Amino acid sequence: MPEPAATLTIGDLARRTGLSVSAIRFYEEKGLVEPHRTRGNQRRYLRADIRRLSFALIAQRLGFPLDHIAREMAKLPHGRAPTQEDWRRISGGFRQVLDARIATLERMRDRLDGCIGCGCLSLEKCQLANPEDRLGREGPGPRFVLD
Image (cartoon, rainbow, N blue to C red):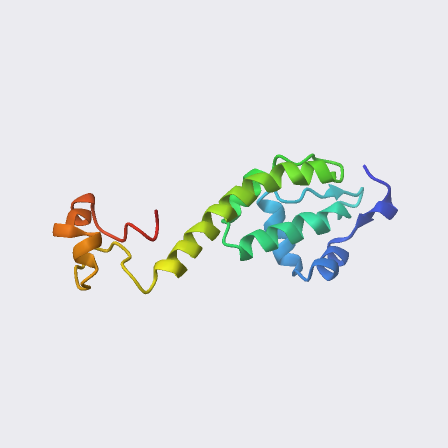
């Protein structure tokens, strides 16, 4: 068990992260943090848990589902503060997903006022980009923006 001075109570962790105590317990149930228990069965968190919870909050705001976040964070070491290399390793996977999302958003922005490949054939340009509704044979939904 870590030295008491190196740990935080759940109230301390709540104050540092801005999360409610119940939210911290929720994240604990999901495996994002693993407190140690005192002899009196009180939770004690590592200072590194501030970073773990902050990372989870940011990842959620970026649209990552909690189960994805938990799977990736499970790759971090248990019982010690993650190093910069530990964080770099898991951030690579998040970076790939974000890069793909950014590319999709840029395509959408750039093509929003033109043909998006929906198969509607309502624009004159659709006769050039989608002659005879060939995209409609590929199934429903937009084709160009999401590719």
